[in-house]
Image 1 (tube, rainbow, N blue to C red):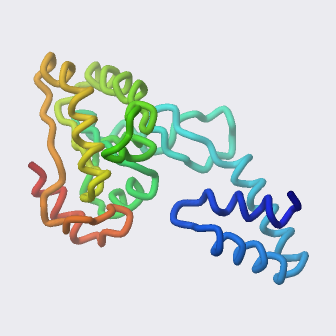
Image 2 (cartoon, helix red, strand yellow; image 1 turned 45 degrees about the vertical axis):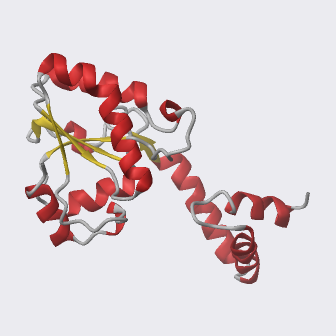
Image 3 (cartoon, helix red, strand yellow; image 1 turned 120 degrees about the vertical axis):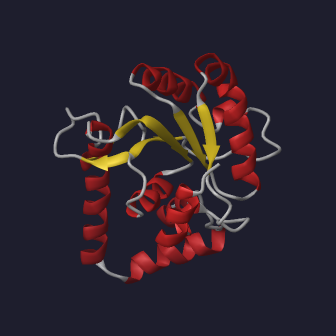
Length: 205
């Protein structure tokens, strides 16, 4: 397998990218010349060396020091510790944070669960989530907001999360809410506009 084939295979692993589009990406890079490729390689190295995963919410965040393990959001003591919002991916968190309405903490599940998945606990951070909720209870947690996308995978993920958290929710009488249905069915949070997010948060149930 040559370099073109190997790079095509890597691009095909990207979300929503098929073999044909992957090969187009490869030839696009080749046509841009050495300067473009050098800059691209440099940026990839920066992703590797300057981005860390938060050990609290599991989002990726830029840091100048590998010693820093917690993102600015989780480090902010002024946020509301009585609420935690569960999202599928980093881009959902970023979009929700842009709204400026939500002032609690987050947890990134790391994906969603299809209805045919045989091992759902392996598709999201199930063990880490339970640990996070238990830790948050000690800090005054009262409400868990499940902010998954309004599509089949998101609904199935919400059901699974409800199931694994049920014993903790019952034991500590926690409130579990979901975003208001101002969001259209089939919506991915990553693409929702700010005003709609504000309404969904304010009208959660």
